[in-house]
Length: 517
Picture: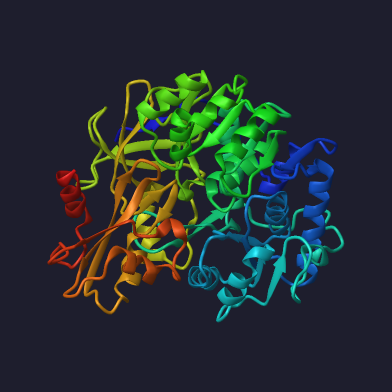
């Protein structure tokens, strides 16, 4: 067995909750959160006070400790307060994509067992529809109450002075949803220990400076934005400038205004930074690093972006099931096309996915990861957990890659069936199930195909005697799915290729598309 380890020493495993770790990096008088569009600022003292007051209110109302709170909101300072208020009270936060339809929201609320939903006024109609048939007892709005729904201020109570007692190794503090390597979205159980260790692992290599600002458009409901930005930056004494949705001009304006030395992005933004004419209107000479993750970034795009902006373009690698980080590129030490080196306290193997034996050095195989940041498992899904976390605690990532002689990881392919649209996961099985509800479609399969703007987009193959058009399929799906999941290409076929056991052979369909390109 060939094990790849970090070139950096292990970090101590500290007995802290994630909120304790974040609080430790805060200077009370410093501004730690800024609402980008308005400039509204939150100091460290205000943040800590809000977290403790919300924790007290949740405890008094019986939502914590032990309860699950759903949080469906854009990137605003209060997102951070709500997340840590629930965590401080000993609860679990399930983060929800605010573009979800009521159908998608209902599925997550039911699966997570959420009893409270915190959202914002623009999503109130979706929230009301989505909680039907779930255990949710109340909806709370960030900001003032509206239409009979209480505002967050009404949920504040007597401050909870200390972290509610929790078992750091077993208590699930965060429950984001991921498709893993296959199937429908599943609740990823991340413990207090998972998050605190991964924060320390990332901090050991990030060289973040106290007072350092960065613009946070990466959504906090996604583990990349939630942990790498929200938790790690605040824990490092930094300041987050929040953006509720990505807009290139606003992103560049805020980056220039706050002279952010680092940008944290996804590949479609890298493409815009490399090619969009708007970039030339801004002074970005203060940049020292641009880090991309959530999906592979092409070496040519990375090089073009770095050359245009005169800075280092680096990548990281991870997944929700890894809390999320396992590999990062140290500042100033990126390598063309590489996703970085292994984090401290982390081991890796490159394994033949068929024989489950280690491949020769430098050869491609499935990336397996082991370390204290590996998730506890999938909620209510022991079968999927056992398929993902195998003997001795190794997590099968479903990604194909190799290491070079210096320990840099390169991602070359994917065993996973999920599709990455602008860094967001789309589960083919979820789309297929919905497409098959169309009365004219008798069979369907969905794969991801390359797209210059989004990285990948869903393409559907359908079997139908009277096939609907792409526009008709899109109209059929619209009420059921978030916009980024929408099918963008459609092909009518005589039969869907399947294995003897009936499993869709998506690799055959991908090969067909490549052959036609």
